[in-house]
Image (cartoon, rainbow, N blue to C red; front, side):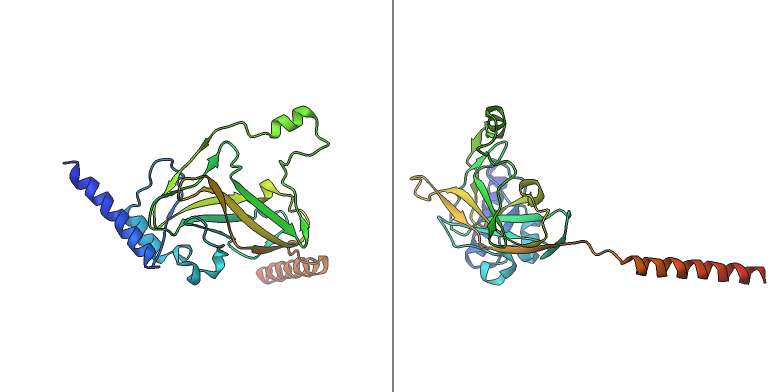
Length: 237
């Protein structure tokens, strides 16, 4: 009785791998499970229609980097302009473009294996949690990542999604043009050690929120008051 479910799982994995190798689509996995991920039939159907599941050459919005050890990395935003103070959410995809399961590294509670680089114009920004020379010893200790790590496996034809609010990591209070790149530590396919896979560059702009001028507000309020007065007069008549 256990043979049929096992065969169904194997068939799904084969379907995903074959379509990925044929440059059709990639299934997105967002649960970040440490167990071996098996896509459902519904997830496969969703991948066939999703823009970010398309092959690299058909997904210019993805800002995909070069292939490294079977992995390819992407970073994108939902739009290219944000108002000052608005959350700037980056969607990051780690895609397995090889024909077999491959491994990447992750650390907890802070994922130091994923490194974000942000520039405003030509200025390189520092992370908010970066250890600085003027910190006290205890401040430096609090910034250390003293958690654990793991080595999740990504099946062929699958991409793992990460979401980061850049406002939590960098100071984005200054208006201007920003350029972002991300890299991730992955295991070499021959199991001989680790290397990095790097995304392309993504850009966005931060601007002041659009507020109506005082004169426009005054005109609007005046117009509303006049309209209410006219309605009151008409009602009396």
